[in-house]
Figure 1 (cartoon, rainbow, N blue to C red):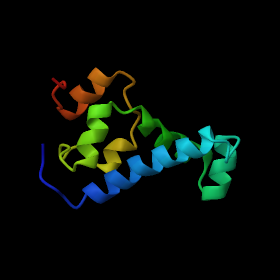
Figure 2: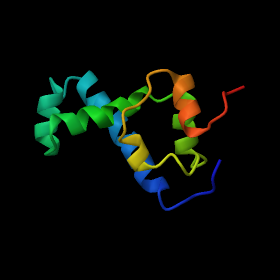
Figure 3: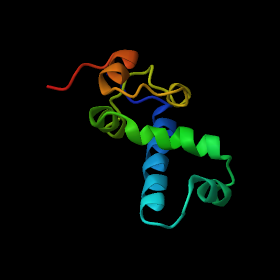
Length: 99
């Protein structure tokens, strides 16, 4: 895993925002992604892409929070379509399976 980089804050912010928005949808603050998008002044597709980060493997999220994720795991990389299988996520970014 890489040492802290300038990219860490952007990655951390994206993942944090995704989980925050998911909680707001789950607790009923917003009834839909469209309502959330209007509130955040983003389009629904942008919100949906960011929300998909809540599907990251838990060990990948932990690595991001601990700032020990690989340098290739950038905010630009996280905006690409996310593999649904955790094993494929790890393979994409060269992360070992957790022990």
